[in-house]
Image (cartoon, rainbow, N blue to C red; front, side, top):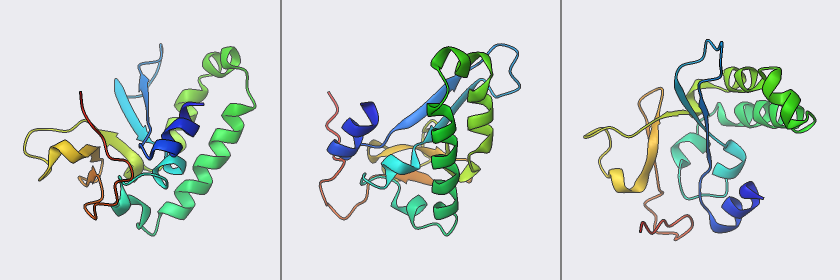
Length: 132
C-alpha cells in the first residue's frame, strides 16, 4: 500500500536498512525504489541514465523474490542483505550534506556517484513536497 500511495501522489520512495545483526552491510543504507521513481518528479537524472532499464529489471526480480517469502523468513534468511547488494550503486543514496546540492530543499539525497537526486525543475507539480 505504501508503494501505491507514493505512486498516486508522485512521491519518491527510499528504502533503508539499519544494521542487520552479523551483517557486513554499512550501518545505514538507502536505496531509491526505481519503480516508484518513474512516477515521481524526482530523479529524472537517474531515470535517463542508460543503466536504468537494467536496474529496474533487477529490482523487479529482487522484489518478486522478496514478495514470495514470508516476512519472518525474509528477515532470518538475511535476504535484505542480498536485496541491497544486488541493486546498482547509482540508485543507492546518501543523506544530503551541506553544500552538496545547489537546491537542497528539493533533493532527497545524493547517489554514490555524487549526483544530487532532486525534484524536476520543470514545474510539473508531480511529486511536489510541502514540508510541515
